[in-house]
Length: 317
Image 1 (cartoon, rainbow, N blue to C red):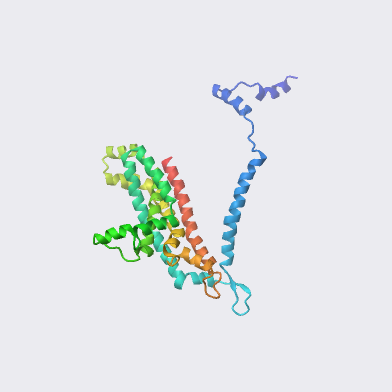
Image 2 (cartoon, rainbow, N blue to C red):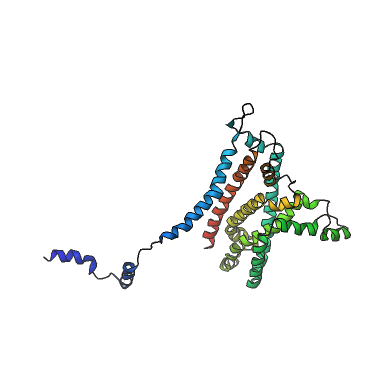
C-alpha cells in the first residue's frame, strides 16, 4: 500500500531543488499554450496570395516565355533559345551593357559619397543633426520618377537655371548633357546617396568607442584602426550597400523614361519598348528574355545583400 503513493508523489509533492526552481516551476505550470485565433491566419494567407499573384506568377511566366517562340515555317509555338541569345547581342546587348556600366558607376559613387556624408554626420555626435539628415535621406531616397526628372530639367536642362548660370560664368554644360548616360547618372545619385546614408548609418553608429580607445592605448594609428578594426567590421555592410545601390540603379525606370522619353539605351527602357510592341518579327518574346536577364543580375545581388546584412547584425550586436 505504501509503494503506490511513493510513485505518485515523486513529482507532485517533491521539494524544489532551489528557490529559483521553486519560483519558476509555478510559472511554467501556469503558462497557457499560445494559440493563434483562426482568423489570424488570414493575414499571412493574404500575403502569400499577394506574393504569388504579383511575384511568383510573373517570374514563372518570364522563365517560360523567355524560351518560347514561333516556328518561322509553321508558326507553331516552339521552345527556343533565340530570345536569350538576342538579349546578348546588337542593340539589346548594348542596352544591357549600358545598364551594367551605369549601375556600377552610380553604385560606387553613391557608396563613396554616402559613406563620407554618413561618417561626417556621425563624427559630429549631434543627435539632432543625425535625425534631421536621416529624415531628409528617407524622403530623398524615395524621390524619383517624373517629379525628379522635372527638377533636374529645370536645374541643368538645356534651358535650366543652373545651366544659364554656368554658361554666364564661362563653364557651359555640354548640350543635351542631362539626356545622356552621364546626365542620368547624376540624377540617379540624387536618390542613391541618401539611400546609402540610410543603410550605412546604423553600421557606423555600431562602432563602439571602446574599440578606438583600445586601439589608441595599444599604440595603433588612425590608419591601423580603420584597416584592422573598423574596416573589417564595416566591410560586410559596405559590400551589401554596394549591391543594394547597384540593384536600385539597375532597376530604375521612371526617371530615365521621363528624362529621355524612352530613347536611352538601357535595359528597363528596352523592356518597355518590347512590351509596347516595338520589336522585330520573330522577337515577340524578347521582352521576357530581357526581364530574365534583369532577374539573373538582381537576384544574386539581393541574396548577397541579405547575407551581408546578417553578418553586419552579428558583428554589431
